[in-house]
Image 1 (cartoon, rainbow, N blue to C red):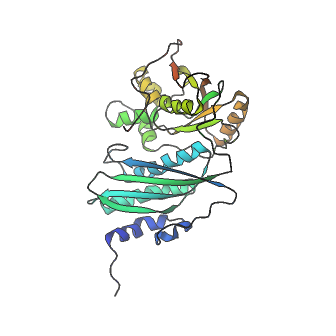
Image 2: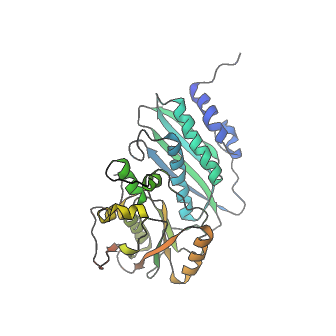
Image 3: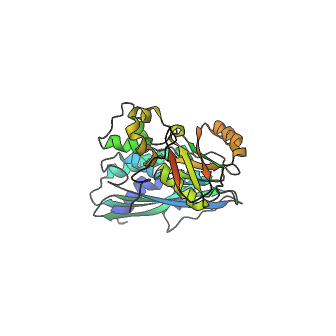
Length: 318
């Protein structure tokens, strides 16, 4: 007679084994066996999400799974990499229902199909709380073609994809501090759109994704390159929903997190190539400023050219 599986392994079999990529070996072994595409370099990143910090505790579990995967895919997009597979570590309170796991896995399954990626393995464990999730993403890129934070030069343009500020304003809506009749802001906070598919190698001199706030993340590019930057608030692309929030929310748009758009340094002679590639991929891009020689400081100027000051440049956990 075969003994019944412990609850943890039964749970893995029901909800996560169907997500396994071939290299994940049906999640039945201690590790995956993965052969990266020939002649490519691996790109690896990890992000964690905690209930009450990165999402409301009562959030739809499918959306949690999708956001966890997408914020990691955004890191690959920032490096110009294509997705290969992922591992997930999940620490859930003892009373987490089977229905929650089913919804979480369903969200992952939907996005696996959308982005052409599969589960390679991971770990599940119990915790007194809160719910803690961590995902490690693996991607690949042509040798020497990964886009780094270091590489901007004075005179390069500061460019962004999409619109800025929707994620931060979406959180404000969920907290009851802002109204959003369109629902766009909450959707952008809950389900970021990783900008995969842009062929930026040889176009962008440097780049990263905007996860902790535009001003703060631009500061990272400045420090990596040993130079400063200037951005013009009038040039920063805002969605109609963000514009409707009014000027009192401009600071939140510039310093809030969860945009997951790309932030790029671009030499002037490569602008036509970026515009052509963006048009091919159907991704809007906007020049919002320039990099300048000097100390690694981000100067933000309003419509009158006056420098703006902020209480903080972006999100920090510590």
